[in-house]
Image (tube, rainbow, N blue to C red; front, top):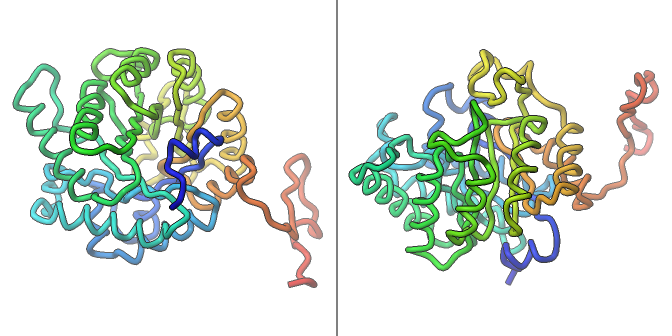
Length: 325
């Protein structure tokens, strides 16, 4: 049996995988819109290929491609009646590619139906989490991601703990004002999630590396457990530090793409800051993950060509040695 996520984290930094839903849109499988995971049943081969690329790049965890896979979200694109089938298919695809060496993380995400202090909303969201948890049977641990409200994140954690004995990783996402939608700072979110029993907690999506570092520092100073960080690979601004708020989102993102080397630098710096689970989110392709794996010492190869980042490349440097190819 492969080591579980907590055993691996005890041994050192774990490298997760990159982004899926935006990449699948850029590959032509869907158009910009709801970004729901019905591709698990309409184009399963596309998801499997992305998983294989992440595995080849050095990722140690494959996340089930069930982002926005809750019943109410799938209802917006006419797939509510296939919620269980979609989640089961996404889990099966990840499990098949992961094999015996990689871990598979279940995926739960913001539902857009959470309302604070609303019993009906809480019951609805809890039921949707429960349905996905049951449909993703066989995963090694669960990730709850893209939570803008601490209340919804805490409910997700509660449902994972109520229905499974698996480790839970819960990640918050920050947009304007550097607080959650229900008014909690990154440090407060970290403390409360840690006290509630999240084995891993941290940050994902929305922010590029530069705008995620302050949140990492704040969370790292708030608790002593395992910390996760998964930024986007699209450049944000100080005025709009979250990528979905930029004019380029959702269909003009290409000019804002961050290079693989910048994500490699992020992996190095994040490890130095005390991050234990390092990965990527929207825009992070296999090339980004490979560079992160190299930075973390998880990917080695005999390169025939190396980038010269400190000076312009000559024609000779640009054309790697084909004589040995």
